[in-house]
Image (cartoon, rainbow over all chains, first blue to last red; front, top):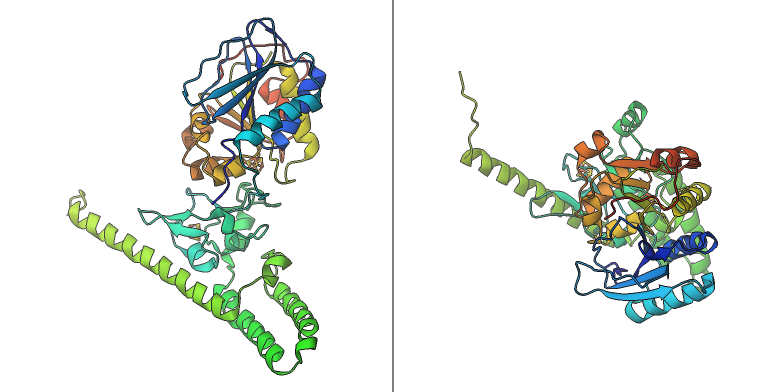
Length: 300
Length: 127
Ligand code: SF4
Ligand code: SF4
């Protein structure tokens, strides 16, 4: 479950009626710092209003001739108002962080790295679901592929985007296109046509290498030497893997944290079954709807 | 002078994929422009936790989103249950400006907040 920062206050720069503009020397670094710390920052002016974005705390900052009377659609909203005329950046941040600490839990750092599906391209083939060993994908009630467990995704690993035959999987924070969401060109499509052989990745070479590694570690080396050996073997294994899966751009940390052979096989089997089940249900409901709503096109 | 369309700025705070100078310059111009705006620390993170705040944002008429690749932004909103109408993006009713590719000058100019385009404390219909 991703820790929510919805409880983190929203900061409103009030530059509306009966107020002056906040000093530019303060405003610029303040907005940058607040955004970098995870706050939502809104500026309203004389004729603009602010909508409800689901926050429970609102911090209103301004240089007021008269304190504004703000109305919100949300009854659950607590409003804190502060005239910032005599504030420094530090004093303001201390004030805002103080309110945030009182109402929101500290969030563990998580780089938002997860697949996003482009449904204009996705054909619901379930390759991604079969491929992923970490339960990131699932199916919704309509048997459509969805991303269900975003935080299970291995940071900086875009491997599943390579197995999608439709180039339908994005990682917005990836360095290069089309995985980062850039438009797809003919070259991309050609490249994607030469698909990674999933079985080579989940089976064959990798399995035998992993097996090899664990057998050797078990039988030939003393406990003391195991760690050293295993480290070297893992390194060799990974170098080989990197060559084998070149182009997949799987980070070394991910390769080195692959589950055990048995776990991989069990996971792969589970994922495959889940995908097959979803496809079967999808086919069944399509068949049912064909029976219930036969084609309106008259036959000749 | 900047026009009346609402602006949503994404800081992309949790990764270094948007050039720092571009995102800083655009934000500084926006802050100095007097134009009302919404700004969030990271749309990706909001999408991942299906932040309910994305829904009202997605429904803003004439919204201009300053973030990254339009295809990524469109499907991030969709993944959060706050789909942006594809047709609105096509016909320019909703515009997504890409700080990973465009210069800060180009983006500010499209927003109407480049040097010489703004008028301090300009007003706009906000959220
Ligand atoms: S592999 Fe691609 S096309 Fe197939 S279900 Fe996954 S996202 Fe859709
Ligand atoms: S939407 Fe784009 S700009 Fe915003 S956080 Fe995600 S990758 Fe960064």
